[in-house]
Length: 220
Ligand code: SF4
Image (tube, rainbow, N blue to C red; front, top):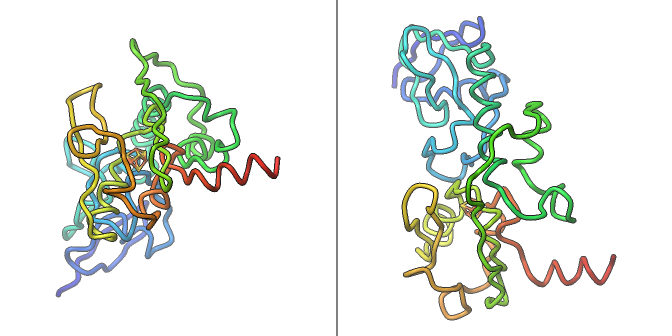
């Protein structure tokens, strides 16, 4: 595969054709924040946290799934990028309900950590109808609190691509979108065993290990 010449934040680089902008930046030690992306999963460009500005392109592009091309001039921290990134984080926070900020899981929430790192500030947006779901605790392996879900689909991809199961999928549309099991039934031990891969890949506390939660309570 041939190499192409690109520039990221003023740094000239020779990169293998087909490399994503994110990978090229990471190899050059340029940090681009991500949320729905994980290196062990196929990139989908869903959350828009990793957007960058490409000179001449009409729109910001998601760096996790956009391949480089010869002569590309990329800006990862331009005012347009920073504003867009903060707005995306604010919108995600606005729809991320539940006591996540105050409870013992807050420190483990990638979204909250990202908001702090990117200095996103408190959300200016309010959702008309918060997404509220009953917490599912039927499975002995996975507790699901979908009010905290930010629809990054990492659990869907991890379950399908790593665990080689296909337990989760997306259902409904728009603001009602939800990660579901089958036709939106609670997760139970008949369909899900204790691999824990979805929990490891969930950036929020939407998916947790019930046994660990019990243990934390006992220790506290
Ligand atoms: S449950 Fe977790 S991993 Fe799955 S879509 Fe929601 S936030 Fe992402």
